[in-house]
Every structure is written in C-alpha cells, then in structure tokens.
Image 1 (tube, rainbow, N blue to C red):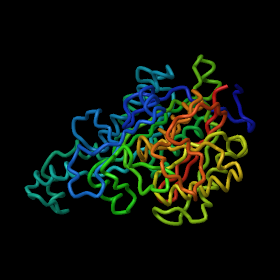
Image 2: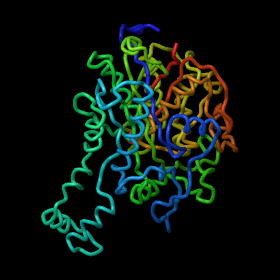
Image 3: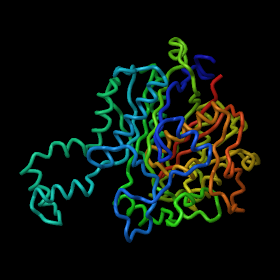
Image 4: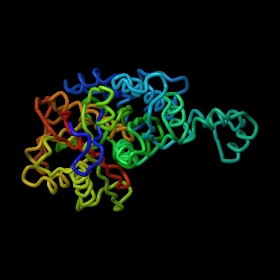
Length: 424
C-alpha cells in the first residue's frame, strides 16, 4: 500500500472499529447477526407506547445508565465502542489518544423525566411553564442537569476520558452526521493536523417525544404486529423507517503512521463527498441532483470512476420516497450497471440509527470488503418493479469487492457519501 494517493495526499486507513446496535455489543456479535439476517427491532418496553401509532424500535436496552436520557445513553454507547476500537487498533489505550475526536451526536434537549423533576422542584404540579422553569433553576442546584444537557457535554466527557487532543468537534447534520464526522477526520489527517483521528457516531434518541415527532411526519412504519418484519427497504410494500439506537467508532490513521507502528489495516477511506439539498426540510429534490452530486463528489475525491465500485451500502431507510430517490441517484451515476451492483441496506435489520448511521454503516462496509461477505436486505418479499435493484435479498452473499460506497442522506438535504477500499 502506498503512503500517498494519486493527488499526493496521505492515504487514510482504518485500524480500529467498535460497534453497538440493537443486534448486540461488539463487532463480532453485530457482524454475525447482520450476516445471518437477524433483526434487532422489537416492541418498545422502555416507556409506554399506549395510543402511539408506532410502538417498535431498535433500542439498546441491554446497556444500563444511571439516569435514562438520550445524552447519557449516547455517551455510554460511545464509551463502549471507543474502548473496542482503541483495543482493536492498539492505539491510545490508557487515556492518551494521539489525535482529535470527531463526534456525531443527536441534538440535546431536556427530556420529560428532567422536566418533571424541575416541575416538582418548583412545586408546579403536573405542568411546567417557562416561569416555573426559571423558579426551579433559581431555587435549586441544577448544575448536573445543566451540564448533562449541553450539546458539548458528551464530547467533552469523551475527550477527557480517552485523552484526545484539542477540543472535541461535535456535529449534528441529521442522518448524515456519522459520514460528516468521518469526513472531518479524513480532512484533518490530509491537512497534516494529525496522524490519527478518533471518529464516533452515537445516538440514543428513542424517547416518547422523538417517536411522536417522527410519527407526525408520517415517516415511521406502523407495522407493530411483527417488529422484525417492519423495515422493508426497496420492497414495494415499504411504508416507513424504524427508529433505532447505536454507536460506531473508527480509528483513522495515515497509512504511513499505521505501517510505522505495525498496525493491522482493516480498510481504506478513499474519498468523501457531500452535497447540500435545500429543496425541503424532510423531502429530497425530485430530480435527485444533490444525491447524484454527492456520490460523484465522493468518487472524484477517491480518484475513482463508477466502474470501480462493486458494492453500495445504501442509505435505504424503507420510506417510499427516500428509497426511490436513492435509486434515481444510483441509476444516474452508474447507468446501465446500476441494476447489477449489489446494493443492500443494514437498516432492514438494525433500523435507522439516525445520527450514528453513517459511522455504523461505514464500519459494516469495511467489514464487507475485509471479509468478503455482503450483508442482506431482509424482508424483501415483494419486489418493486420501479426499483430494479439487486438488494442482496434476504440472504448474505460471498463477494470479493475492492471498492464500495456508503451513502448517508439526511433530513434538510444534508448528504454525505464515503468511499471505502479493501486493504491491500
């Protein structure tokens, strides 16, 4: 493997990975379940779903936290995957990682348990008006709540625990956030600011308020009767995505740095591309131009052409419009080859991990190339004639692939694609 690419930039390699999803904890547990076509989607038990249209999600209930909240669980999931990634890479173990932290994190806001606690403190009863919040804040010591529900708190805590260098960078670009964090890490190493970077995507946003919000957008599946069958990317009878939790961590290094210390190289981040779509806050542009531009930008950054790509890890949310628009984009970029390129969706099994999705799915793409197996798209029982896709239906497939692309297309038109290469 060369130390620099065709453009004279450092080659960026992956030397460590860590995973937690609804399928389980750890890379091996996740990979075994994913390639076996198992689903991590189940009925929600963490809170009451009475009278809710959607009562299912891919929750990570097997990881305990002292006080349940999205920031607290997101931080704990991030800790677990970072510990695994650092151990795999044999770098930065012991709290002294030699590079910056780039973190994909969901928006942070007060949740109902904390609001109720403030209401009780202000003796407001079951309601909590703004004046009550001010009284509670002034009359009690709420420093713990304040610190927890700051957007930066998770990043600062992780940086302190793992000894990353400089200020942690936390970003939230909707469902593209994990891809954005990878791109930031790649660019930092390319610019010579670091020889290594720690990239984390984490999300534990399955709570009543988030579930209701997505439900009001008519974005969620309502197939509550059999949760494992609810996520159906690219199938004709798809009708919504499944909220899910999880985290993924990657240790990125320059190839020169990795080789100098004798690290095992798991994959290569060959290129990243992004393209904004200002068409609508949730819908994609009908012509698919931003999605097309995003994939083409990633290929150009990698110095590759469409013919080089042998696998696509799709965004594949299982919503009618998103899957259709992704196919429109793939068809425009890959032309006549589009129907013959394997295109599978991890979300059929783990659900949509939102902010963490780009990082988690990039890790699965690294594993696909490294181990020569393409995960299936499960629940594909009713093909959609309008989407003539080889979605690796229902059963994993052995395949040796040199280059793949992992797509992340987020609400608000925030799109990031990452090109992954097999280690050589």
